[in-house]
Image 1 (cartoon, rainbow, N blue to C red):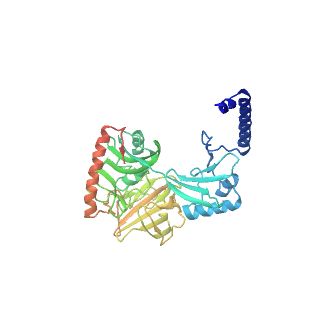
Image 2 (image 1 turned 180 degrees about the horizontal axis):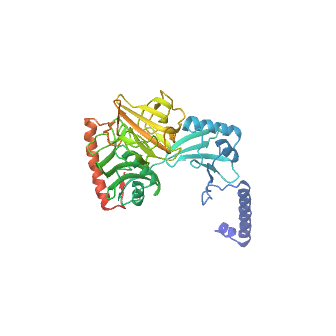
Image 3 (image 1 turned 135 degrees about the horizontal axis):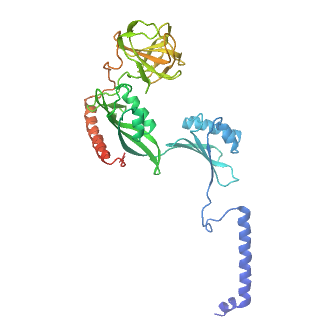
Amino acid sequence: MKKAKDILNTTNLTRMVMALAILLTLVAIFLVATKRTPAAMRTTAQAECKSVVMVASGDTLSKLLLEQGLNHNDVNTIAKVLKSDAGISTLRADNDKIEFLRDDDDAPVSKIVVIPSPWRQVELTCNESGAWDCKTVDIERDTRAVYRNGEILDGDSFYLAGQRAGIPAGILADVYDLLAFEMDFERDVRAGQKFSVLYEENFSDGKKIDNGHVLAVSFEALRGNVQMYRFRKSDGTIGYYDADGNGAIKSLKRTPINNAKVTSNFSRKRKHPVLGYTRAHKGVDFRASTGTPIPAAGAGRVVARGYNRGHGNYVKLRHNGSYETLYAHMSRFAKGVNVGTTVRQGQTIGYVGSTGISTGPHLHYEIIKNGVHVNPMTVKLPAISNLDKTDKKKFIEYRKILDDGIEQLSKNPTAYIQL
């Protein structure tokens, strides 16, 4: 008890307080000098410093990395790693984003995150040996199916009616591409026709990022209700099919240029606007401004490319043993499109013009079946990617599920189906 009493007397207690104060002062000086906080005394973790750069026109990977203080050796190494491990060799202005992370404002870059899309990012970290490690991270999508429907009003175009129904422009463009195999949007659209679209919306952390695929589309066309459903076959390939499981995507499109106005129809007898006498008009004319890209109506091979007095600049494609298409009055040909070239459906083969005998810029489009010119707007076109017996059975089951979902969403348009 005496020792305890001695320790607690006034003199000893004062000395102890002074010694503790000196010790705490030394600890504080040490912490300021090293700018570090021992783990035992840390109350909050120091946040990393992050700067975000949106790639602009004229930016290069080298330029952006050097601006962040990286040396030329690191720049070359990072460029090689991105190309070999992530397949990134160039940056896209107004699309790609890069994040630079540091331990603090004055520290060198310790991590680089390249974001080429909302659903993928490439992380580069500098390891202890100074080398850069690369890791690709796929961002999980929260995909929802949403339903929109509308009606063509007097004086409407399908595009205007689709906008009024709340269908995004990109989805409308996809629907155009699908329905163009079956419809002529100039002649087949009438007031009172109804349509509907089931499509995907992609979310991340509760925020909508972009739209996905068109899952189903229905349109009350003049020749009957056109229905298309997106379906993945057993071999992994994806196509669109009608309600019975028959291929809805034809080998040729009736209207190569979407939303172009028909100015002259197929006719066995037509008074030529320039020549003045009556002769057959073996195709359909679509009005479009000079320079409008002309896509191939179907996959095929270029069998003719040249100039003649009537057609001006023209391209002729052979699609199979039965079908050929011809595109005339082009202002110019697309680069790389020559006789013998294989083209895919939708690939630009030339540009609208008014060469040859023409009263103004337009596309003259012909379909030749077994050597005979046929009306592109009425000819029955062959389907591709038909389903076999097993896949057709699966498709019918899947279509019923989609139809049930569409029925539920039609009653509550603000709802969605979690995919």
